Image (cartoon, rainbow, N blue to C red; front, side, top):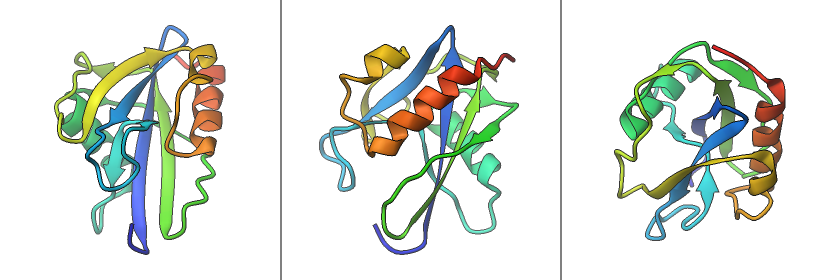
Length: 135
């Protein structure tokens, strides 16, 4: 990834489970790994607006009440912000099969067996699950 990349991701939480997407094995960056849905923040775009846009484009859901949570990605040249919510409209579906080849709902215990994009992603997801937020 080039320097100065801004990424916004979202933890959708429902019934003590979080939705994760599996990055397609053919992806150039971080292939065949589990991650939070999200993507690049466009020039002039607000972080939370980018997160909401990505959820709509990738999953077909309209998110609201986004709460920013700490995520400590140590990837050079990448500035990442994570959000969590339990409030959205629509039913999550994989609308970007070239980007993701699977999606699933996971409990904190099930995260242990997953290979994630970055070790801090697991900690951020576990933290989001512990918040116990509601819509």
